[in-house]
Structure formats: structure tokens, C-alpha cells
Length: 293
Image 1 (cartoon, one colour):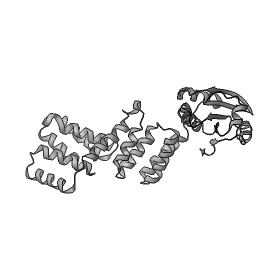
Image 2: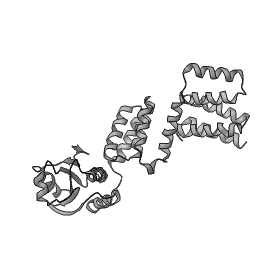
Image 3: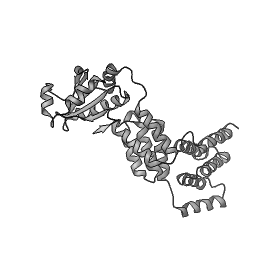
Image 4: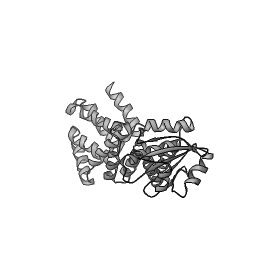
């Protein structure tokens, strides 16, 4: 494995001198000794990788599978894993054993490099966003996947992938991405927006059913339920402005209809469309004008 322009690589007994001893004369090198069967190793590995990438080249990481490289384990007198050592100027200067929380791992790396500033992950997220805005969903998805490999709980990357799957007509895969969001981030506005969009997608109707609803509303403008159902179907079909128009019409005629259902659904639309969407901004202005008229 090699990642981050050589900042993270796999090491062996044979490459230890070159990858760790010699390389540490230029920048500090962290060596992470792990094994595939080690549960704490799987927890710690991505955390160290994230911190190393955030250091932007001020430190390197060498990962060594102890099962495949027993000589190095004996040389370093490793008794349990994960075991982490930091080398500088060819000598070990710090280390720890066992999986540590992310805050402590970050502090460990900061002790070798100084404060961590915005790093490659932030830059990659910006690149992915630019690709999405340019319509290059393949490039954006590829970047998000790479970020998620290093930082599995990165909400922006997971939500970005979910949105791309949703835009590509794959709501099931979008929902699977949201399942990977850490529980403490589930209320993030970006997560809630995709959840709302998924609900709208699930309410999509065949074209003939939407046409039938349009006919019912045209025949009876006071049929609020038909108009409400039509608004949901139009939103699911991407006709955002038309959907908002119908809900605003219900509010104009009867604000309290069905326990304020039209206004509540309108807020769900705004959440699903996103705060910067033109339809959202226009709809919010028109809703305010109605409610405070």
C-alpha cells in the first residue's frame, strides 16, 4: 500500500533501514506494527493515517504486518500490538502500545510535527465539491471514496457519495452510505438533507398518476389533498418550483389544513433541496410573505 504521495507505505524487514532509519533523518517516521487478526489494530490504523495525512508531509508512516515480518518485531521487542514507534534522526524517540482515542493520536503526531493545519483531506473535499458542481460525478465519487478509506467517519465524504448515488438514480446505495455515518453525526444538516431527499424519492409516482393528480387539481382547485399529493410527486420528479407553488397555494387558501401539513411538507422540501438551492431561497421568501402578511 502507498498513499498520500508516499506519506504512508507498507514496510518489511528488508526495507526497515531505508523506509524508517534513513527516512527519519529527513522527517520523523512513525512505524505502526499490526496484524490482520488484531481488532484494535483495525481501529487504530485509520486514525494514525488520518493524522499523518493532516500533517501535510511533516511526518511519514510505515505500516508493518508483524505476521509477515517477525524479525522486525523481535528487533523492537514487541510484546503486544498495535505497537507504534516514532523515529527521528535514525533513533526511536517516542511510542505507545494499544489503540488510543483520535485526540491522543493527534497529540502524539503533533508532538513530532507541531500543530496540524488544514491538510490534504480538506483539499480533496474541495476538489470533490468542485467536480460535483462541474457535473463530473465520477471524479467526485472517486475522491470521496479515497477520503472514506482514510477517514471512515468523514461525514462530508459519506454524504457526498450518498448524494451522488441519489442523483444517479441509486437510492439504495445512497441509503447504505448514510448507514456509515457515525451516530453522533446523524443530526448533521447535510445528513438530514439527504434523508429528506431519499424520502421524496420514495414518494415518486408514475407519470400517469402524476397526470391524474394534475387533472384532479385542475378540476377542483379546493381539493387540497390532491394538490398536496401532486406537490410531493412533482418534488420527487425534480419539478421543485411547481411543487412549491402548489404547497404555497394550499397555505394561501387554508393555512391550518390537515394540521399545518402544507407548511411542514414545504420545510421538508427546503431541507431536501438544500439551503442554497434557488427553489429553496425563493420558496422561503414566498412562505414568509404569506405567513406574515
